[in-house]
Structure formats: C-alpha cells, structure tokens
Image (cartoon, rainbow, N blue to C red; front, side, top):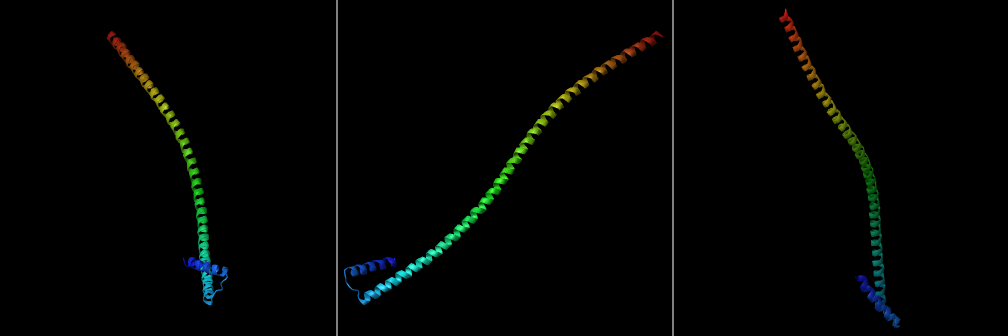
Length: 148
C-alpha cells in the first residue's frame, strides 16, 4: 500500500524531470526518502521471501520424509497382505483336503455300518440255525428217551 503511494509520487517526479524542470531541494529530499523507503520495503520483502522459502523448504523436506515413511508402511502392508493371501490359499487347500477326507470317512462309516448290519443278520441267521439244531437235537433225544 505504502509502496503504491511512493510509486505514484515517484512517477510524478519523473514526469517533472522529463519535462525539463529541475527539482527543488525539498523534492530531492522527498525523492531520496522515497528511494530509501522503497529500498527498505524491498529488503523487508526479500527477508520475508527468504523466511517463506525456508519454511517451504522445511515443509517440503517434512513432506518427503512423510511420503517416504508412508511408502515404507505401504510396502510393509503389501508384504503382510501377500503373506495373508498365501495363508488363505494354504488354508483353503487344507480345508478342501479335510473336506475330501471327511467325505471318505463318511463313505467308510456307511460301508462299515452296512457290513455291521450284514454281520448282525448273519449272526441272527446262525442263531436261528443253532436254535433249530438245538430243537432238532432235543427232539431227537426225546424220541430216543421215549423209545427206551
């Protein structure tokens, strides 16, 4: 704002010089003061620019460090994800194998149950045969005793 005012005053003095007029002492002093103020304002702006540049540089450095850290975290997470996916694949294979084994056990149990039922039927048949033989033997002995 002050720089704009000084720039306007400077333009007025410049036009006066271009028209061939000489500057009075007061105008020369005013111009010198204006130049010093402009130089001071320029120096202040330079310093502000340096500070801002330093801050930005620091911020950029921090941003790069954070980006590097995030990249490392991301890489670690990707590795963990790959490991987890391999574990899932392995567990799926084990589950499939266990399912197949279960089906085989169920089939074996059905076969054993069938064999057990057949064995029980054979035992019943043999028990019936033994009972029939006992009856026949008892009948034979009774007839033999009755005959005596």
